[in-house]
Image 1 (cartoon, helix red, strand yellow):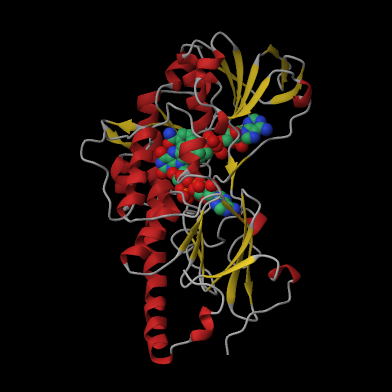
Image 2 (cartoon, protein in one colour):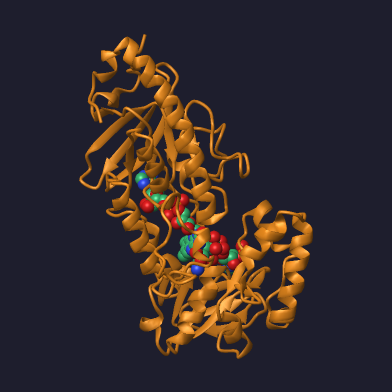
Length: 417
Ligand SMILES: Cc1cc2nc3c(=O)[nH]c(=O)nc-3n(C[C@H](O)[C@H](O)[C@H](O)COP(=O)(O)OP(=O)(O)OC[C@H]3O[C@@H](n4cnc5c(N)ncnc54)[C@H](O)[C@@H]3O)c2cc1C
Ligand SMILES: NC(=O)c1ccc[n+]([C@@H]2O[C@H](COP(=O)([O-])OP(=O)(O)OC[C@H]3O[C@@H](n4cnc5c(N)ncnc54)[C@H](OP(=O)(O)O)[C@@H]3O)[C@@H](O)[C@H]2O)c1
């Protein structure tokens, strides 16, 4: 017989909601794509989002000059192509408009301002219990059979602890709060990190007459975004159909060397492992160059080694050099926040990613799913979403058939969606 566990005292203190379908956590592209897939198959769901809008990463935490790095056909969500008149690489505004149209086309209405604080599987009643806190401090507990984690690979900023940073005195921001170089005109800015964010922030600073120095503490793969007019990503995907990763890496690096030349002389050391293998094994994304390299060659972006310590208005580098700087942009990356709220260790590892690599990391046990943790950007999110929505719909429809025969009124005891 169906029963709830009342082991938690606070079970009675918060509003409880029975969800007749899955709870999806996160209304970014992954969560939206899962919701759309479920909607298409008539499965009800609840979509919880901590922010007050869909795709909050894109709407609130990206810089103005951002464009998609991959051609649009690799970034569209299932069953909804980009408008014909969109360029090959849509900009941030176009991508957000596309996502808004996606949500309205599939009539997706997330519950905004609800942050999931904890989720755990209740063995006693064999259901997931998902606790949220809203911006108005009200607390809700959702009870459901399926839980879809779609909180993203980039849910939280990484803020490194660097000696003396608290004594620096100037402006220090993370790249997720950087909008444009407008406020940095004429300033000496230290950009910490040389991933895609660090490179593009440095380029944007140059374009606004600021003076960026970019910290490269280890190594980085910089590749041209296009080779002979073809997207390098598309080319890599094409070759991977026939060739092993190591060989595709070698070909990509050879073509890159022909186009970009030797970049080590600018302080940009290449990793010993190839770009695709590095992405697959360590999740480190190669940089697709859209102009920063030219500014590095012309010394408008200065490449500097790792940081030793900060002091008032200064930074000391590991090579002993001291730089006077006005501001710091920490382009030091992001991390998943799953370990902070999901009480589960079988499917997800300590770093907040599923333990099984793509394409097997989308489904766990007891109705747990993960969308958008493939390290393959939007194309990976779409692949996950399609699998998840089909899988849940199959079981949901079977359940419905059985329920029609039994009419289980007890499951309606709390409240329904
Ligand atoms: C600057 C930048 C540029 C990028 N450009 C590209 C690109 O061009 N192409 C590409 O393929 N990928 C790109 N990416 C990767 C990017 O992560 C994906 O494109 C996409 O945003 C992933 O979608 P998602 O829904 O999985 O995660 P997100 O977009 O991060 O969405 C997750 C959502 O979950 C919500 N959330 C998190 N925690 C909770 C919680 N506890 N409770 C409730 N809600 C929660 C967040 O508020 C967010 O809205 C970029 C990333 C960054 C940072
Ligand atoms: N247009 C686009 O499509 C676009 C634009 C921006 C970002 N993105 C995507 O967003 C994701 C995140 O990119 P990201 O560039 O923000 O993060 P990232 O790829 O994780 O890069 C972080 C960088 O910070 C460096 N770093 C971290 N801590 C440091 C410290 N204490 N001192 C010096 N350097 C430090 C890292 O160096 P180490 O390598 O030595 O650790 C690395 O160079 C990626 O998937 C990326 O492709 C896409």
